[in-house]
Length: 390
Image (cartoon, one colour):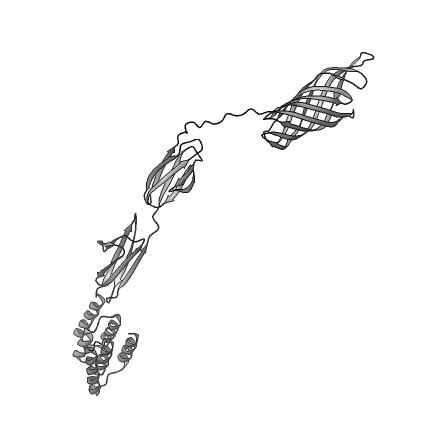
């Protein structure tokens, strides 16, 4: 057909010769022979040559009979530019208009398929579909899952047209809320997070399964519609017979040893510790020497934090003791603070280090003179303690 168009352009551009009647007759006869053999392209070429050599109404009539393609319309438009007969030009223009308005197949598709089709406002089935449409411009509308799209399509010269529409995947929103917060959610047997949850799902019915320790499992089916939000409220019931275990009272025995020195330069500190430990509390009996004096005390200690590393404060009572000079001591008190660190800790016990600084006040009596004096010690010490028991 491309060769035909080139041939048409050459023939139109070639001036006619009055003495070529014999050549025109020969071309016309060749065109008739090709016409009989249904060789339409050759027939049009021969008729065009004949008409170019000697214009004749019958040659034009045969060309009209073979018309219909966009290429033929191009030739006729060029032909109209050359003729001077108004009636012939009108007839030729009508022929071109008729060719342009020939009906053709219109194929309409969509992704996903199944969309409703309207052609010029009239229902025409569902995609995919093929319909015959007359020549001219048509308005095509498709509708699916709450979405719609439209296009204008022009049919000319009987040429088939394919029109394709693409829709976004239709989804709906499922919002799941309720108690207890943090419960595990699955939808259609697939993990979907924890309460509360918001999910984008395909339209249809979905199964929701919610579980949480100490609660009965919650199950239900819900329908999700495209471009809509479905709200689900989950209220779980505690499982019968599942009661939270009572908090255990863990009291552990404690044994330790303390070494250090008096910050005032009055001697070393050496103590043996016996006691008990409960959570952040410890109660100790301390025996030994502080600043050269015999030392016995009862000390209560409290860790300010519940972790393995914590500052602590302590308050105690000093009972009796004997100094290096033979003097006796009466009651007093002690105040201390420091850092407590559990080096190793489990349910069965702990190994701990304690760094302490304190102030001890107590009276002493000289055994020779009977004079009493206030003794003050400022010990800096490090203790290693072991606690055990459940």
